[in-house]
Length: 355
Image (tube, rainbow, N blue to C red):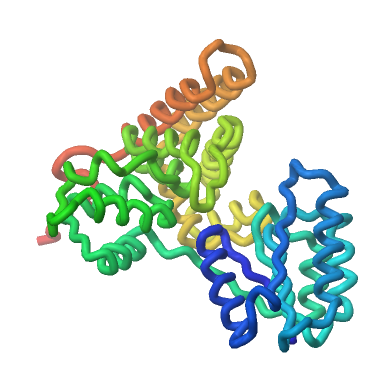
């Protein structure tokens, strides 16, 4: 028998992986006798409560099976444990029982280093899960439900849900029921059932800003501040977003140096700044962006960041969301004004003939 770790950012993907794994481990045994499940209380729980759960798991795992060939002990949200709370589980992992399958499931935070080390020593099997993208999930669910969408309706769903692929099955089921006998649903048919905007990856904000897309940047900002789901368990705080924007501009400032003449120099400078290796492609991207903004544009960006930081900390009565909306719009405006315009923008000048 062995120890398992189910990990991955998407909680729904972890649940599906856990269900599959437990079904395989149970086999022909009686699930009600073979499986014992526990969940670690969140960080708002007490140390005593978390320790009690960890102790109960260790005791169950160290007990022989009753009426089945194997005992399966599941511990969910293991990341909510602290090093102190986790000690009973760590002690068990030093000498796991042959007749027990211990399944630890991620969630609740970062898995304590003591458990990670103990899992490695015990030769645990890792089951890393990756959530399906919204497009793939939508295709699969539509096919299973016998529902068809026009191209514009599909794009509307993908844009609206963004990273929240876990919401697709419920949405498709609602559309199946609401659509009745209709075999093809258009954008106006699905609009009333889309619900709240889905989450996006944080770096989409800086991507939109660097592209000079004011509207797109403001849409992403709104999602980061309000949407939850997928890998974003709760809305981002304005100061978190502020720190992200500060770091983005800081990278551009670092490569705004006449001695940095190519992506190799830029990668070395950004590696030194970040304290970790930066590959040539993102270094080239930062260098191109810094050159496009120019020293004047970067100086303006720093001034905007400084003013917004003070406003977020109480220098104005405006809510944090409004402060960030103004900041993001102005930063995207700097990028937009730095982009080449006109029919010949971006073209290299023709060489004159030497004849």
